[in-house]
Length: 296
Image (cartoon, rainbow, N blue to C red; front, side):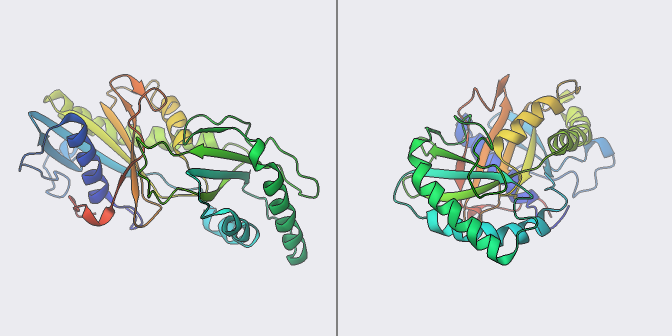
């Protein structure tokens, strides 16, 4: 497991969410069959413990970011960082997302970068108020990349999400922020589905061994990519990925760890409910309070 992921703490974060939701506490029987090198490879899940009266088995995996993410971010940061600064730290309780193609900065010279920056700032100032506001991370109300700005050589879109008080505290670091979202042409979303199919194929078989023993099985996905990953994309890809997959986990969670002092826990599927028809989304947790339940 790559060091950028946080297996043990991500599992603890999900466990705390399950304890709060089910109003039950874990017993002192937690262990990692993987760390303990269980003699049966199909029993080497990442963690098991009892919550209330129910044994839970957990598997964790990181969602790999786009292969060229780092290089692309270096180029795009020069173009978009001043725009993010200009529209962040507002006094409202909205998170603004600005969607652009991932190759937006390709071919722009220094002078062109400055001109495009100024053009986009002017356009956002003039147009932000006309875009509808939806609950944060609900379905977008206006089309992705649906706007053409004169003088800007790529399509854009601006999306405004309101932070409801049920899921986000008044001092949430997302309030009044401006975030870039990059879209990739081609088969990237199909590649995401294939990545999740592989994760499910790898993890479900081990979890199924514990399910046959009566355990509730939980797959924990971790993402730390602000540029090319969001909850809707993962949720949609997961539906396709596990559509014909046998021995599916009982519950699947996504833990977002891209912001150092705040992580978010979202249930993508449980009890026949999906991300879109369940309200178990975006529970904040301070990662410094978490315990590394495994060696990774």
